[in-house]
Length: 383
Image 1: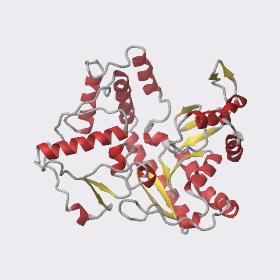
Image 2: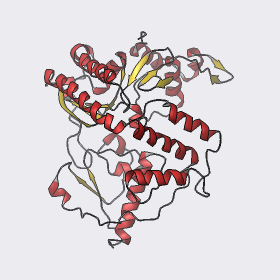
Image 3: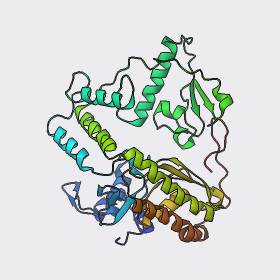
């Protein structure tokens, strides 16, 4: 792999810039940045012109294929996030790309004000595949959560005859379902909720695996999902065509079965690293290729999971932290066994070689940060 631009160089350049200095970092023609702009320039542009609502790992995706990603400088990485599992079939799968291009050249949007010739086919395919009666299309995961909240409340009032304004939504402490208002109202993520109170009322928090707490929940009878809800843009023909192709790839290439096999190998390799570093790795958990490594924050101090993800990036592996002490490892389901082993080795090497240096050299605050607790229920959070 080619040498990579040092992170500190990028951050120092951004820190020392003014808004008027954008043109110093790349080629700009008639106000539009050249598509050949450098990673440093593109990160700077986003810093200057996009709201700072996210904390990305500083790598720029230029193009991808399967489990591999390349940045504008030609450096290759293995993607162990897969866009939060949105590209489980791998980047730019040829069958999915063909469906996308073919449909984009025919019709892209109709709205739900009219019928189109793709969504009915997709709806039938999806419901038969998963064994449901009907589907309501949404554009994002958080939007799906919001709709599920509405659907549950509507069923509660109309079918269960819950008294007006008394419906309760049950969610688990430590969950995260998105950043919309209903989603954060279920969340114990202080970063997502602070500054947005009052949250939606009618919420009950329980611990994961707390059977006694769940006795408050009444299991709904068959048919409780029958409801009428509206959505203006869901079910567009472009998304429907791509959705059919995406599911066909999962079936044809047996990606679910492959995920189970590859996931077992990934967790086996990570468990060996945990045995070598029990004072650092608290838990390895996951199903299939949807996995997380929970670290012991006191052992990392003053480093964080984000710092380790930067070191993984320097070793050619792209992963994303969750809070201060958890790293997601959710590669495409199409990833190869050799790539799984490469990712697991990189994680081991970061703990063995990079973390000790981080702990020694990263500036330490006057005192360690106090254990974060949930603003809502007082539970300790995140390692």
